[in-house]
Image (cartoon, rainbow, N blue to C red; front, side, top):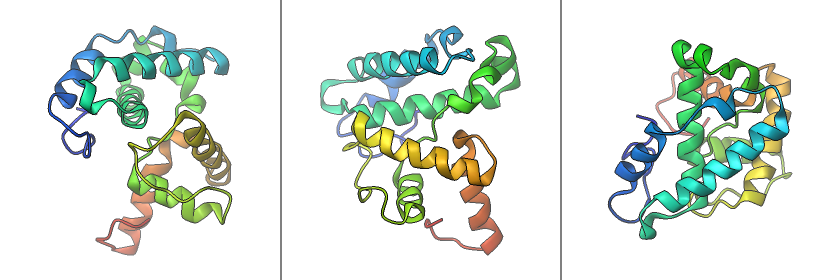
Length: 168
């Protein structure tokens, strides 16, 4: 369910959700259950590129594929059966925060000028993602949580404020 019409909003074309789900339902998770940061990153990058190619041509976007993969991996981490079966807890510190308009704008706002302005998921590149993820690591250290959980922290902050808006 990580790849849905909502999470793939702006995908430009039909078949993105179906193609993404078909790809992820056969993804071996073994490579992501590692305490080796470099091995995890290689698996993340290789899988992102493969997911881009699995999407229909009009829906191919590195940023969209990375967002879908990060949502999927986070869901796997949160599912105790998958987490335990594939030792995903070993890599929890390496999981990325899924970048979308809400998390991207939150990172941009909290970065106080250290990041380029957030634009779109479709416009996300590996280099720009690395900048946003580095800021997420910095903020996660302050919050004392792995960065993968930052958007949950921000959603909680919104709930505490009684806000119905989308800004963190």
